[in-house]
Image (cartoon, rainbow, N blue to C red; front, side, top):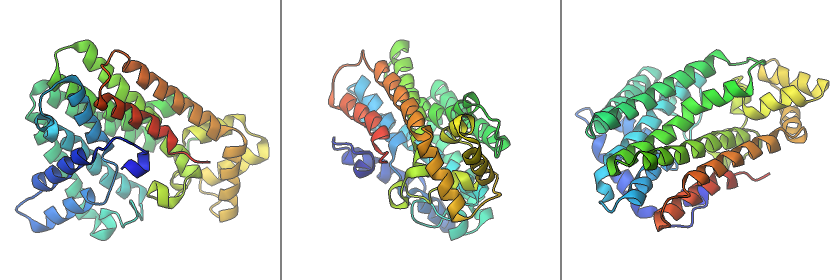
Length: 326
């Protein structure tokens, strides 16, 4: 994770705790189900969501982070479950350099494994009481709402920036925020602190998704863990595309429209569309919006005491943007 997000603070101990606990909670009486569940969770990933849970908790209280380890793991497992279903929907051929679960095994088993992972996550979240379990459940609902809205807008060239922000708020940002708020709820009764932790992680999540969408255009496969141009392939309208369709010149916009709709799939047309997104300022515009969200995340932490945990959280925020290399 440190290499991907350029975090200088040593978080290896926390990552070891997360990974060990994942191995423990995913063991079942079915060797096949256990194998498939662990295949997904062992495939890599930054463990960013559970790490934020642990760091937020440690920032607020002196209690041992072991008390929220299962909560952190619940969010990572739920995230992985959503990826399994996303890969099936997108007909993805690769995930983090390896075949996704539905290709490694089969689609029916992958669906069942995703359902199993959600059930494990809910069970872990429920151990923290009604308030926290409600937050976990709401995060799952937001994921579903965001996915449906995104699906309904595939290839919709009239989609607005507000529509896009609504989608990524539900699919990504709220999930980040929910993890941080859950940890804060376990740590303190201070509602202002709880809300600030939510705002921090929510805004990091917004910036994270926008940055991911930029990297789909300008990133390299070995750095982003998937094939670039995935959004083009699936007719997903992202912020750079929405900006370019509104501000670009006719010929360039025409080609971009054809590529988004899947009417032009040749390499030359896709490369022209990619270059157009850079040249018309769409990439720079999107990076600027992502930076604004990071600024809002930092503002939410102004009242927090300066500690190593705060420094790590701030590094995570800044590193979300530093992933971009044009």
